[in-house]
Amino acid sequence: MTAGMLVGIDLGTTNSAVALWRDGAPELVPNALGRMLTPSAVSLSRDGQSWVGEAALDRMATHPADTVTSFKRMMGTASTVTLAGTTLTPEDLSAMVLRSLADDVEAATGERPTAAVITVPAYFNERQRRATRRAGEIAGLEVRRLINEPTAAALAFGLADRGDREPFLVFDLGGGTFDVSIVEMFEGIVEVRASAGDNRLGGDDFDAVLVRLAEPLLDAGVLEGLPADRRHALLTLAAERTRRALTTAEEAEFTVVVDGEALSTRVTAEAFEEAAAGLVKRLRDPVIRALRDSHIDVKALSDIVLVGGATRMPVVRKALTRMFGRFPNATVHPDHAVALGAAIQAGLLSGGGGLEEIRITDVAPFALGVNTSTRDAHGRFHDDIFAPIIERNTPVPASRMERFFTLGDNQRQVTFAIYQGEARDVKKNVKLGELTVPVPPRPAGEVGVNVRFTYDTSGLLEVDVAVPETGLTRNLVIVDEEDRRSKGDIAESRKRLEKLKVHPREEAGNVALLARAERAFEGFTGHVRDVIGQALTEFQGALDSQEPRRIADAREGLARLLDEIDARSPL
Ligand code: ADP
Ligand code: MG
Image (cartoon, rainbow, N blue to C red; front, side, top):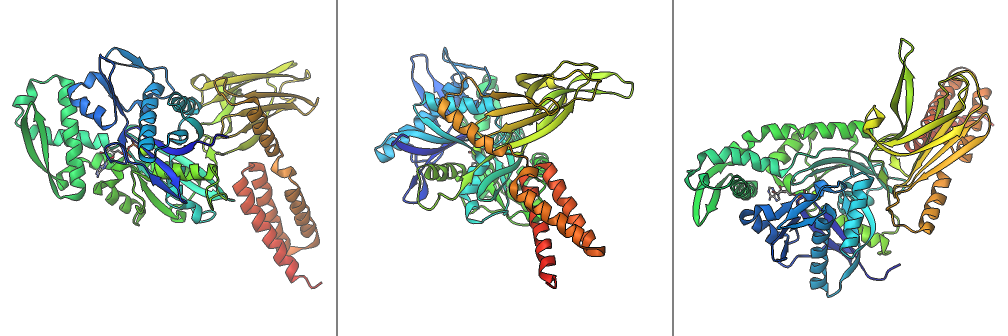
């Protein structure tokens, strides 16, 4: 373990922030300008100068072609950006922001951070997460952990102090992305139960609405002569300023300065809200999807927490209050929550006082499964159909098993191709590997093969295939080659996963409870017997679902029932 300084970083699409765990609390670190937020913007010049943050953003108006923002959207892709003749990857650009934040910490504390907890959107896939890790390494930071942004935000809002099953809905509207997540603690573990979003919706879109509203009112003379990209940059900057002003005022000036000449018009909050109605409508869908995926009722939400600068807009808060019939929680500054939560996680990792009890987990961002074939009503086979084994939004680490059957007469082997994705057609998903197991020759459909997927937060997927008839097994561990974790780490992860593989039906506690319930069922008649039977069916259904949460609920219900019956017994 390194002894150096560990910081928490919100590496955002629009803005980034860094925080420390100090004296038992998270604390933001200001940048050289004294601001807590550093725009995720980079600008270069031909002579090799570089600017990051506010200074880069300032160059956006004068050198739009040499300046870039929103490069987080490119993370995990092969795209590059060429600024003033220099070609950079999205990791390079992110690393420049990270380095600038590390500089700020060094300036503020006198110590250079050597390690970081970095936040990523809950929907980031393995490739995007790996790119984020690489950005940290390029910046000279050991990335001790990546945590999901909504998890970090929920920690900052005190989720861990609430106890089990007090779900938070994290409503994060940033500059260009909108994310809704449902986060809760379960048996001392913080989990993202579901996440949904719209990665093309954020403050920027509200800026565009404002430009459309205000531009026709400007005396366009000076604007007319400008190149399109410069004109766009100037109008957007003006819109953003106006929009912020409208957060606290009923009316604001929309001003563009071109070559020393100011063009100006007034915009009312009312006109803005009207023009933004279409955007506000789009906030609803992801909320509904997240609630549905998590199977959590809106009434069961313990809190609705606001994250992201754009949630400061009154029009957004009003819409939320209407949507939920109650006021959202904004007790933590929405722009700071994610970085503060990352610092809390940093505190946890360094054994910070009183925090040891919380553990954090994640959900699988995409479904994991295999290719299968199905036969239609005419007996024709359709190949390459995706059969998910671990569903999207399943809390990880997770282990699930499915059984498949042979399709051909006297088939000698079965090959499973393993995929990550959501599409029904496997070819549209990401292929992770392949595994073949020999089977005894039999008529089609007579040989069953069990496929078990076991997945953990570090992206280690273990696939076990077993043919019960012959006892033959095959095992494949899918780790990313680029993952730089040591062999020891992987062995440790595998050991951890090993524990998960027991089917809940075979766990000692569950076996004992089933036996007890069956005895009780045999020992009673009539109504009591019916009630026991129902609880027993419920519990067995839960065990078959392999969902820890459902199992816990059903187990508790059944045990309580049996205790009550025992208590009433005359003996
Ligand atoms: P990201 O997570 O995408 O990096 P942020 O959470 O920093 O983004 O949010 C940036 C957005 O918040 C921008 O669109 C910005 O205009 C908006 N924003 C920040 N402060 C305010 C404010 N006071 N009023 C309205 N919008 C604001
Ligand atoms: Mg953000």
